[in-house]
Picture 1 (cartoon, helix red, strand yellow):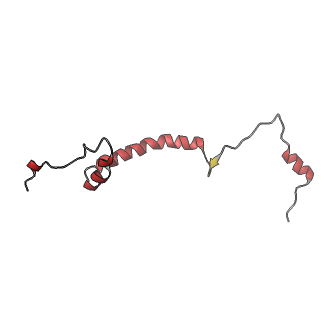
Picture 2 (cartoon, one colour):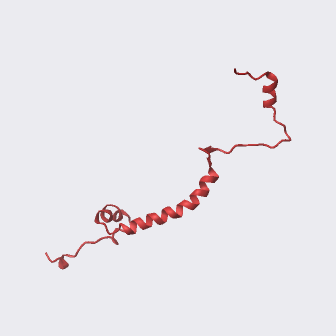
Picture 3 (cartoon, rainbow, N blue to C red):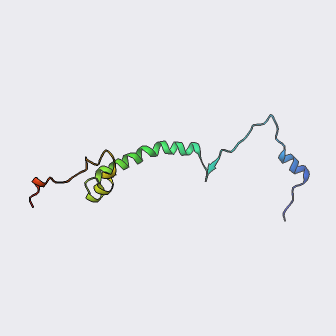
Length: 91
């Protein structure tokens, strides 16, 4: 059995005292607020950067990674260039 709210109850629920605390619910996404996201982000970003740098230097000697990814970067193109000079080539 469902009860419909009476006019008296609806009016009482709509009334907010000017002397009471003002509550506001911060915007969130699945319970995570912007404050939570910044707190987690400040912890996670250094780990992500260090993992990315590790991956670049670890896979830097793989020819496919060196040619397709690292030589496309502006400052690393000459650093990762592994061409052999014609006078040093034994064939």
